[in-house]
Length: 192
Image 1 (cartoon, rainbow, N blue to C red):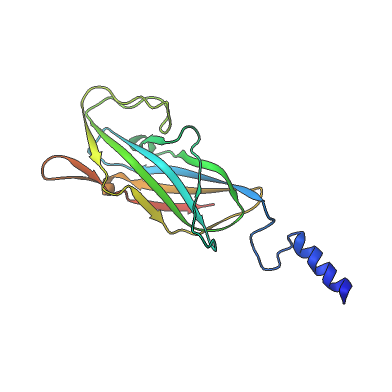
Image 2 (cartoon, rainbow, N blue to C red):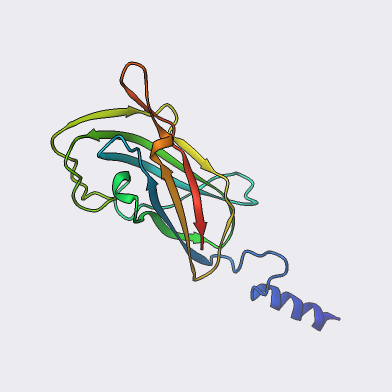
């Protein structure tokens, strides 16, 4: 009987499961979050700055998120009008294996450009050059926090890619006094 118990204990320590479903302790996979857009059609460019992409692991008692790093810098700015037919990386990095239940995005700034030349450089990142000519309008963001209740699993040594859609047309609203506000409408398109 002792031999049988020792074999079972050894099998569990080698991560053959034993009901945990989270893989070996310390194991990681990679999460890549891609952004595309259904644009705000009235503007020639919509620059949106994200300050955080957080993911929440299921079963964690404290509910503390893991920050998904941006490819470069502490924020990520994207021109949504250039993401209609393509995607760009919003965040990417290693995550502990396991089951995740929620994503939280923080949008900290947005600027609309009307009648301006298009941005140059990447669609997302530090190399975006703001448009020239035309006029611009800062967008007030009363609550830039967006929570996406979408479950996904991170598996050791694999990359999980999540595509999200920022719906600019539903997110940006012109007020009666000619200013603009944003209530970000973001949805998960796919997880692979």
